[in-house]
Image (tube, rainbow, N blue to C red; front, side, top):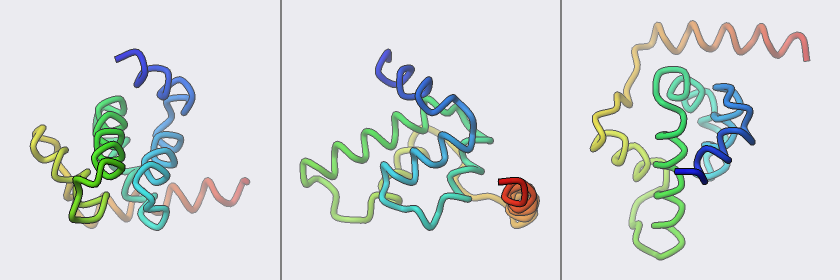
Length: 103
């Protein structure tokens, strides 16, 4: 809804911005490059929505597994692809490294 749109605006709707937000919401900074792939492949609003559902469920003590696993389960239930080929990983990794050079 509107809340998600506001969050997207805040993240500047860039895949990188969304990846950072997903990593923060899910307490999973080490997987940020994975979230970058997700946010390039899928609807960013839906990803953030799933992350918020996950965070909410976690706060209410409903999750017995890690937040990232719960998040992926939601995505799969929605029919989103959560596994990506190694080649895709490599292509994103290399663009990530190029961006870091100019920081």
